[in-house]
Length: 131
Image (cartoon, rainbow, N blue to C red):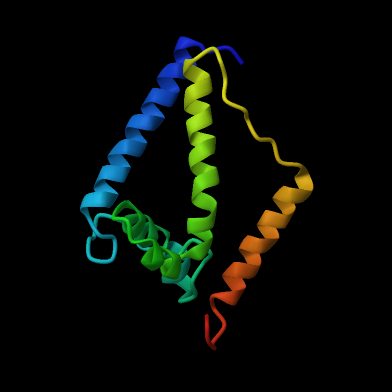
């Protein structure tokens, strides 16, 4: 796709919002601040969803605490480079004429990732170690 002013503006707004959210996440610890909302799934059920701990893990990542981030949510830590590249490629490709490669996953890979996420959500609620 060729860059258009509307697409560039949209990605600029997404980038600005992401940078603002990243700055807030860097400055305020989600474990101690009321700035960030609690997980609605955990609040309703008492169970941890696959995303529980992601904000705290991202806060640790921004401070260079990789082991602490992994302990809070290993799945988020493993998927974050792929999400970051997807956002970077979207921003780059909407702005410049020479695009970055866009990775398209086959449907079976998407289903496999979904199964991993569901199994991770089940495993982290098991009542024995290491969960």
